[in-house]
Image 1: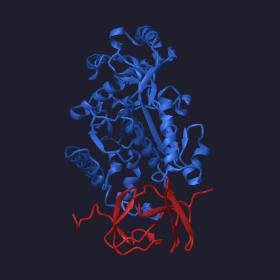
Image 2: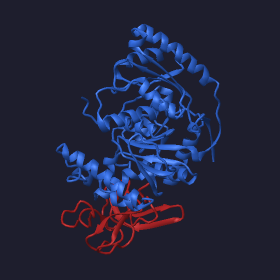
Image 3: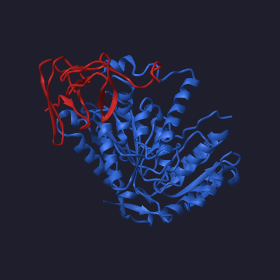
Image 4: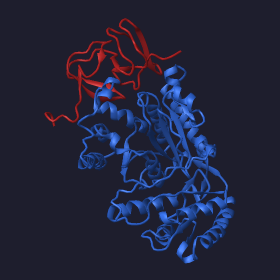
Length: 96
Length: 385
């Protein structure tokens, strides 16, 4: 069966959609014995990320087991995680 | 864990037992090819370098030639020169003598033309072939393996399937005491702080920053800003949010272990474990650099598909998705697309890649080898004067 989303590292607080996912879908991801079920509160396009748990404002968004940026606002479990609520910690002329 | 390899006189271990016909200058490339064509048991590697190099470029080209021809997968090498070039067979032979590589040399000018040089070269290569044929594989610890990691023709799945699965394999090899080298410095841009955090010590961390900054400066000096527009609008549409995320997808093929050393293009690591080779993102040039650094097996992840092999070192091709695998099955060894299909996990595919590495190191042919792919080039920094 085609997998709907993928979790890359146990430390991650986001998973990535492997197909178009819809609001209300219940998605399971996991690594070995670490499993997470998330009900989506928004549509998630293919290749995009959703939150596996609540992420507070200023907290790190973690993918590949590493911080890929900081949440610019509180992100609820099941929400779309992208440029509207995450900012890079690199290449910031104003924050070097 | 053990594999079956060729233990060389100088202690290094080969995964193949090639006799290599190698021109030290582009001018003798056809002669080298002619010699190799007369003896099907040999391989050749032709390129456009050997003369007009200065400074750092000269060092890099020579280092690459020495690393490539002195590699443990080469049982013996015939160096073919023209006679008046900067890097003559004698220059390379002088370096190879220090590491005890079996070699012969021949030059077109000295032999008195193409035909005589081909004749002389063929006689010498026959001798090398006979010697090589007497060598046998023996059981060797996997800690002697150096794995090269390369990605090309990336797609949206690269950072989700093939690269992280290759990372699992890399971690498994490092756990066995082996070495894994990943490269393509421009694809690390934006993840310097993440890589530096994984550095074994402060010196390595500093070097990570330096080398990535140098790649960025080089792009800037050519009037390009590779960071200002990263991730690109297309990347963002595809779901990539930050430069860190994009670069992590690329570097993930190096797995999760500590970075023990940063080496130059074609420089042999002094340490075991995970190593970064500072180098170009051009696939064929990258492969050569990895081989010259000592890699005896290469894992090459690809989204769009690639046929590329090398003259002396096996390349295991890993596809990121099943569509590419189905379309190019004759070129691809392992399909990481099964992770999307629900028929595998990053861990199971990573273990499968590791198993393939050990089997290929022990003699199993890769699809690129079976099809006869022997792409080769040397990364010259230029300018060639």
